[in-house]
Length: 309
Image 1 (cartoon, one colour):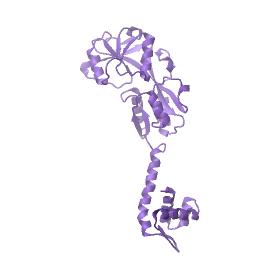
Image 2 (cartoon, one colour):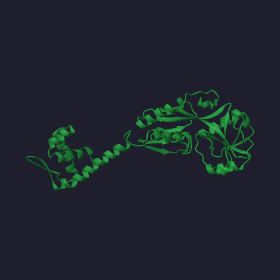
Image 3 (tube, helix red, strand yellow):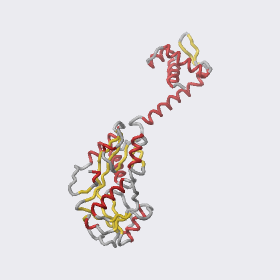
Image 4 (cartoon, helix red, strand yellow):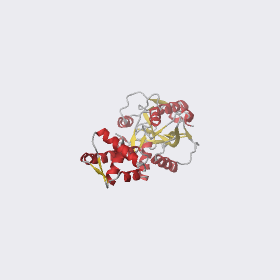
């Protein structure tokens, strides 16, 4: 059904004149007549009766009018659902307990009127493809490839460097240390069962291990964060890395220890991926917010993989 014809029908019905509908829609009276005639031909009924005073709805026209109004309302709802600023900004985060999700929560607190649709995709390749196809608006990811190798029209801005901490149980040899160097971690078993080969976080920890002679163990099923914390709490040998902004809760009896790492401090480089032609106002506001809270970048005393520099 031609919605322009439906819109013309409603305008003529409301004004009672074809000329009034023509003036409202900025078309000719002849165009109004043709649109109405096309509707009447499709339906096989007369919608208007011409009178000396204008046009009067027939019984069939009166029956169609409320449905015509609903069609136009549905058209407006459909357009509003995808109109920038009228729909929620769809954002991918690597995990709901990790730093990007925290950044989004802080942004929403600073801009409480914004609507966000938060999703979690598997890896950076999936996220980049989803941004490219418009399935999502933006994604927080570590980008392991140079910007020139991203698909055309895709941009990635490094927005947040998250320091890593060492997490141990109370019986671990390093449990009482307030801070530790990366060199001192050589020979200790760093257990990271959530690492999946080929992902951006796998690339990060592989390069970290090679650079400092660390043993990063990915063996074993990943049952989630709670079983990992249980295992760390009960072990005198296992430790793991966690981001400083990761939201972790554990029973007091676990007595887990978070230990700062320095000389250098490993930082995980989060970038915001987006299409260069995405004009969603909430995306613009998010980028401005991230820029406003980001401390002045300094590589002194920190480590990131070569592909992030």
